[in-house]
Amino acid sequence: IVSLAIPPLVGGLVTMSWWGAATAFFWGSLVRVALLHHVTWSINSICHAVGKRPFKSRDRSGNVWWLAVLS
Image (cartoon, rainbow, N blue to C red; front, top):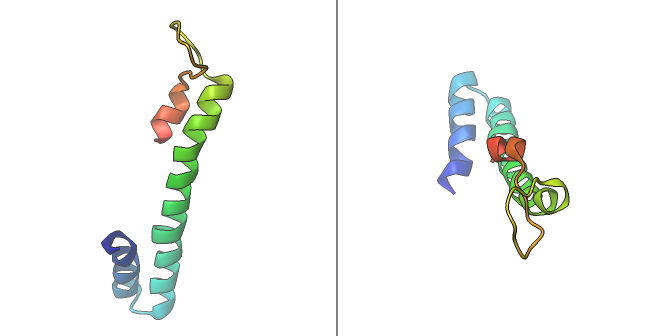
């Protein structure tokens, strides 16, 4: 809850406007959480579809280096 409240608080104080608070809430809270969820959920689907498999395993999971950088 605090991580969702800090961006609009800072945005509102920096710009001294409600518009700054709303913009900071959108980008600093909503978009940030949405991107984090997309990267987290992509790990499962992308790594099982196209990941490199440098070792034998019973499952189809693999490693994708650029996705590790994002996560």
